[in-house]
Image (cartoon, rainbow, N blue to C red; front, side, top):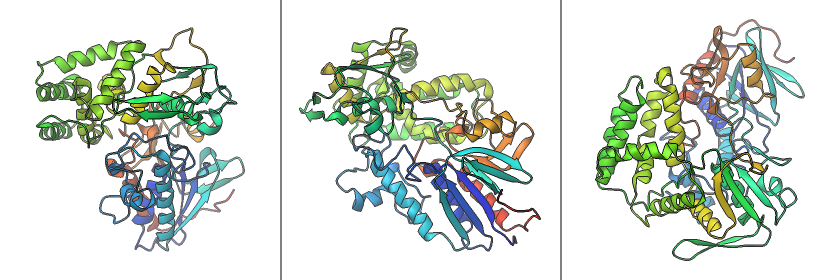
Amino acid sequence: MRGEPVRVAIVGCGPKGLYCLDALAEAVRGQQGRVDITLFEPAPTPAAGLVYDPAQPGYLLMNFAARHIDAWPAKSGRPSFLDWAATEAPDRVAPDGFPPRRDVGRYLTDCLALVRRNCPRNVRIKIRPRRVTGIARQGARWSVATAQDSTLFDEVMIATGHQNWQGTAEGGKVFPVRTQLSPERVPAGSPVTVRGFGLTAIDAVLALTVGRGGAFDDTGNGLTYRTSGQEPARIDLRSRTGRPMLAKADLSRVQLPQGFEAATTNLAAAIAALDTLRNIERELLAPICFVVDDLLGRMPGSTRHWLTDWSASLPGHDDIEDLLRNSRDAATGVSTPDIPDLLGLTWRAVYPALVRTVSHGGLDPVAGPDFRSLTTEMERIAFGPPPLNVARLVALSEAGLVTFGRLSDHSMPGIDATLPAASAVDPDGPVSGLLADGTLRRNDFGTIAIDRDGCALGLNGRAEGLSVTGRLTEVDVLGNDTLNRSLHQLNDRWAARVAARAMEPSPAIGAHQT
């Protein structure tokens, strides 16, 4: 057994960093090996980070149902988000509803406090509110550098999440919205363009409207908007294609067709049984479209034809408003689901099986481009905003305050609310340098290559002691943007490996501090 603890750095402590911390603390519980863990997180609220900042406004919502949010492994006996919310936010959370992100941030912050309070005696946890600027191999260990100093660690886990995810807004970032999208930054009465049509873009629109004192009234047949007079004169929501994100259905209200659960269960089993996904059309898309056609009583090929047309479409304002209105109604049970609605619901139902099949080498690189094209469209169709936010967009459009369309050479500069691709790397962060020196390499899909327990793969093989989790590994590990801890087991396998290392004899290596 080691005479000294294994020194572990977790770089980035959003939800993924929290999961790594908890997995490691539990993996060494009851054994004699010791672990010292340092969390590097510059955000003021570790575990919540910037995305789930507890200080953000309540109108910024999750697009993930409350019942699926759980920071713990199954049957851990510790509180899920719904358990926590029963006493902390009883009036704001329904199981199939979409809670405010700030409440999820409060939950994650409390989970971190619980891990620290209940960690075993052979684990020490320290939080450093510092941004890591570099990571480099030094002998058998790893030097983790900040602007202030550098420290040696035996194990480093990179869990930094979205790279520069905030975007920019004429001299600032989109988040925190209260300061970055304030009237001083985006003056009332002036037109503004929001670039992007994803969840961040919708947050920006809400910050410029309800965040400026506007209000939505429920008429019983949708929402209407009451202006405060502090909004921009017009908000032009623009993206490359104009195709919007459709409403993510509230499963407690949507009218599912008879046989949906049985059909999607069988479909998921067929996808999970694939050793390798090689032909996207034959093995994935055709079976999904067949199920949707069958459940809706449509002619075979109807769903596939719709998806082909959708993927080539460049809708204008009126078409986009109609798409949003129709998806709002289907997502809330006002109307029965049509092809796009049921296609999204079916994709969501089989997605966990797809994650298990595709992750860690289950996707043939030859099929990669087709898979990426399909998942890009299904992100819009299946994983869009909550119905309330779609209803808000429709109301703002009907009020003449928001317009929809495509980016053009004549679009005004404005708020960049797009997210970098998973393959994008912060040029000033540690991953950039590790790629440059070959310690890390990209996989066949352009993201960071890792093995099944998260160990980084470089040009010369495994980078022992250096691991990566989260969005940087997307496709190699599918579906990283989730708060459902049971969807992936990578962090638990990493923790088991580090815990086993804590039981090994100590190497004869010098000091840890440089």
